Length: 301
Image (cartoon, rainbow, N blue to C red):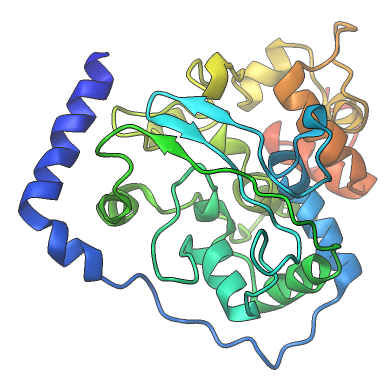
């Protein structure tokens, strides 16, 4: 309760002092991708790696995939992922590729308003123009579904989106994804997937009072996930202590099986079922090699 009260007071001050100027403060430069052609097959692969299907589907409800609707309850309120099908009103069928690029890489809606960081746009900021074009081509092939996902239900002042512009200026940057000299191609590919598209840090990193990721606790686990969920630490030492090797972790990302014979819980189980199980063996090994800080794919000791 103290955490919520502290943030409420801080954001209330923002509303009272600078609300008007924040409302008109622009975010980023508009992209220009209209002339770029995408590969829908590669885009579908990127969508799997990025967790789009897992987050924007609600299998238990009987709703079609990518129509959103699965609620995430947090200390700030309830978030509802939107419909990503090509329906012109219920989904993103009226968007342009530039609308899509701004949403994915900058976290900005077509009307210019900022998205809440429940949408992990900070991790997608590294995606290239071609990555975006491929993703767009894949989503353009999704059948339109006239299914309304529902609206977020957030407490005041979190329901005032312009306050997100200050939040993103402080916490909106994602972890580094650029290749590191002296590391293998496999390790660097894993870095790109883990720190970027796969957004592992979104769940496996604890948050501060304002909901920003704690840089000093990156991948050190979190006990404060939506719906009272928990995510274990996935730093190299923690993974080795839990019995993981590169080969067993790569297999776990395909099967959901853990070294002790158990299986991943519901949250990570969904990630595997809708995401990592669809990746290539090489990419699963790359993720495992990076997380365990191993430059070769194998038993890892």
